[in-house]
Length: 526
Image 1 (cartoon, one colour):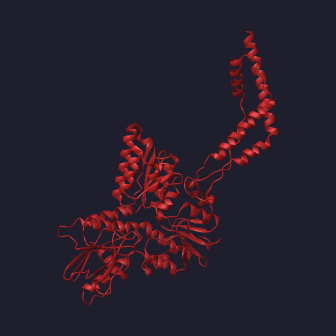
Image 2 (cartoon, rainbow, N blue to C red):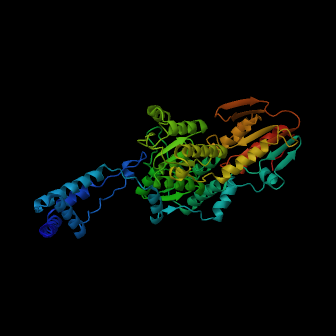
Image 3 (cartoon, rainbow, N blue to C red):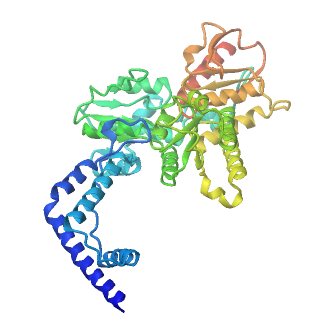
């Protein structure tokens, strides 16, 4: 009984002492709270983002100890010692200050991740951000006049209305059933034309080529749009000429969050023409980040779209093809030489990437213009890898796969496979013309398909590649320029034709006009 009474007195004494200490700390130690607030602003990005992108955060005020917690603490101590607890106010304050300092130190050391998704959404509230076309008729008419849209009167339009074929003399043209300008590309070009009309007298800039087609970009340059200079390796783009009040266009394949932040800080009007399918990939990697998964991005690390996608990811590895994906999969299962891994992917990983700890959870994303089949194979490979390592019950906790394959890229590749798949039948072609910009990834993949089937194939970016006479200069899928003489044989010939998603119909028609001029006497373009 005496012991119970003694413990009760100890509890009451401890509660009074704790109450006095907390009041003393609340009124007399503001400097420590200020220290805590001042030291707690700390953030960085898991990507290579500059200091201008770092988000500040304040360490939350520590809640006061509740009566229940104080009582439990005193009771535990009394049970252990059976002696009165005589902690002084000074000791309580010292302990609290030490805890505050420890928390502040932890906040400084903790790396906060820049919330790219929240920043992108915040742009909508600035009043200086446009991301939808206005469907201005005058702008559309000017596009048609410049030949940077769909054809309505030329050879391509004629084939589209006549079973995708056209014959003149000895030449038969077979057009792939899905080809050329995709919806996202047309939308981007249209928004750029609308921006020129919507902001008369304003200086327009664009962070990169609007699309990967030289003729379209040349038109924009003629309309007074300045292309922001890329100063090369490690220097980045030169935004020095962009001033407050200017208008800046983001291209169809997007821009990095770093570039968006620079433009927002400069208070310029942003016209964001990013294709919604690209934005879909960004949403995917942001999901990976929230779930603390590393994004495995199927793409080319130097491609503008992949650079933008990586900027919205947390931790990431970019793999170009199946061999690189297989290397990553093997490392996940069996480990390996860490330094070799880091050297192999030195340009294709997030900052401070550690393959020993950051490949436990992975999600798949892709550059929208990559080969559909290869992206699917990489997804299946990594799914099998994680299944083998963690088992069926844990797979969902370690692996995320979302459908981010672009419909336009997929349908053009499928149409190309159908075209080349007719070999050995009456529908076979003698050669193929692949039309599109030489820096267009999706056009390159169309050329790859033709070469895979061993069909003579010529990748041309403009009609200027044909001539003089029966000569041509073209590029193969390995990005090597080639020259050919007498490339168009005498007699009857059937030519398959396709074009990349950034290629206006007018470019295809100009090349076909050159072909008919060489093969058909007295040919007159439509």
